[in-house]
Length: 358
Length: 125
Image (cartoon, rainbow over the protein chains, first blue to last red):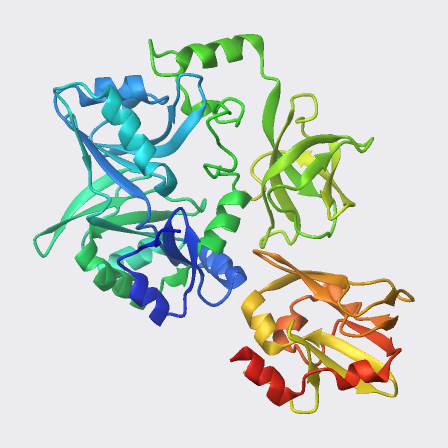
């Protein structure tokens, strides 16, 4: 096994009592003191996550926007300077290679934040299609990232960067601090207000300490997972895969089929025309029960397996099991009674409206 | 790390308190800390005859489900129903309110074979 990559915040995490695990080839903290407490801190106050494992790409040059519009599903042309959007990179079959956020820094410079596990693939795929006049810059090895999330994240921002204002929702801003460029994005993966902050790796510790001193509670990947699942944000590699389209994942909102062309468009247009056969459904336990986990079978009322959980957890906010699974469309309707099979026992559940937590 | 000297232990991080032929079983302070937040517990049925080493209960944290093994042969006489409402008792008081189940000891020699506090501490390294 190859050695896991270390975040520029690795030492600080260990100092903070972080429990390190391997994630997408990186050694990252799964938790510091308690996943439940970290989850609560983000829902009620403010937490900070290391997202240095994520990839940062820049696409630059005349016509960058037009080209990206043909590579990605959402409408890049609709972005003004400083605006961002959630979008997908698809393969020719309409399957998801990666889900990412793209920000327009200027008409000739776009900033992409991609999943750690997909970085290599994204760079290869984009590089393979890249026209000569554009450049693709992978800054992932040079940048550190942290996400400050929670209702009090704006307070933390003004305490640390007093006098500056946060960009508006989904927006990006480039700040200069001590001569160094910093990217601040008003985005996140928790469903709470917050911002993602990208700086030079050498400055990562300094900024983390400042955010922490300003009240942000260190949080790990464990809380990140329960927070995103309560909001039904998909996890690539689990809820999204090269075999599933964004329409099947229920994320058609981020696909602009009115665009002339983008990779995978034909498959998606056909799927929309003919109707889906399976859809990613949100499943909530009726009562208490052993926590649902990825890989557990979903069965119908007759006990036939109709799907497999792609994500699952005991929701810290609801105290009940919550999960996602691809189900035949006729069963993916809100209210359908189902059961999740846990170690051979059936726990009754039903399909509910997304998200689990509003 | 709290390892009470009056209890016996297994290498699977369970503690056993034997009194009047009944063994009360739980998981150690070390185990609860490793698991972190316990959110669900599945306990054996009362009256079930269990054998040493048999997986008979499950303790689940946010991230993982862990099997709990019977430390001794015998019949399950009681389970801690309070854990259904309050599984966090396992984290808060692993040696008291967080006990899991009681076994009627069938074979006293098995009790003698359990680790004492020193041996368990050594096992933790």
